[in-house]
Structures are given as C-alpha cells and as structure tokens.
Length: 222
Image (cartoon, rainbow, N blue to C red; front, side, top):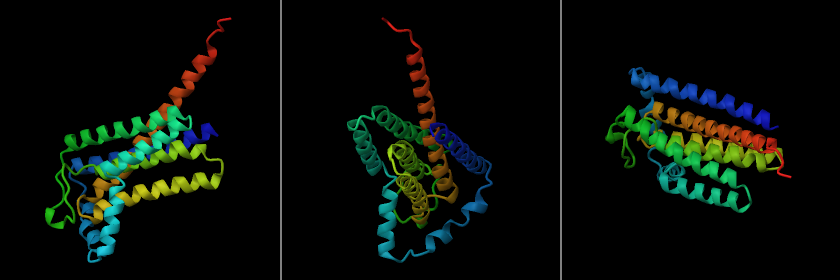
C-alpha cells in the first residue's frame, strides 16, 4: 500500500511541476497573455453580491498567513500529541519551506500585480506565483498526504483528499475573482504548491524508510 501511495504522489508531483514550469516559462517569455486576458471576465461574475464577496474573502483567507499558520500549528500539535511526531515535523517543515520557496520565487520573477482598479481587496508584493494559492496548496495537500493514511476507512481517506484538493483549487480561484492575481499566477500557485507538498512528503518518506532500514541492519549489541 505504501509503495502504491508513493507512486501516486510521485506521479501527481511530476504533473504539478510540469504545469508550474509551463506557467513560469510562459510568464518569463511574455506568452501568458492569451490566458491572462480572461481575468476580467472571471471577476465580473457575481461581483455585485455582498454575500459572495464575503464568502470569497473567507475562502481566500484559508491560504493567508494567519489562518494557514494556525491550521498548520493545530494539525502538527494534534499529530504530535497522538504520537505521530515525524509526521508533525514533516508538516511543519513542508509549510515553512514552501513559504520560503514562494517568497524567493516572487522576488526572482518580479511580476507586478494586475491593475489596482480591478482589485477588490488590498494585496502587497509581487504577483507570480500567487502566495495564497501556493502556500494554501502546500498546507492542504500536505494535510491530506500525511493524515489520510492514518484513517482506516477508504471513504474517509478519499473525502479528506477531495476536501483538501477542492479547498486548494478554491483558494486559487478566489485570488482571480478578487482581482489580485492573473490566471497564470493562480494556476502556477496551486500546481506548484501541491507539487512542493507531495515532493517534500515523498522525500521524507524515503528518508524515513532508509533510516529504518539502516537501523534494523545494525548489529546487535548483545
């Protein structure tokens, strides 16, 4: 079962990195306008609804700094309390390293945000990749990958995975609707963040298996 999970993680990570790199190349070479031109149309849908605005703002907060760190801290604490200390450490490391990676990418690419006239809330920093989308995907996909294997019922595992995937996609869409990112920013953020999470966790699993193997091969001291 573990081998099958690792293969699935590796396959999904490769797909995620491929999409992320495609968006990155398109942005750096100025070939992203045919995708980004749809942003105004996405923002127009339901823009007059105060209920929708509040809902989207709540959704986008799930990828923001405060809620993201609160959820990560609570999840890591629960894993630690129930004895899954390595998983707790991996979750914390994935979230923090993803945050640093996204910050560095923003500085390197240096893409300006969309016209402030279209923005429905304040946003600071560079635009590519979307920080909320990237970091949100890192958190929620990491949670799914680390917690789902602990659930006994297959339906519960699938439900957790789909809930985290939909949340990650929703965060990416919310950044477009609020007008603070281009479509390529959010696409790169969601797929890149998911790829980061799955790659990080896959590497952590391989390291743990090798460490366990080395420990079991050590000669007895008796």
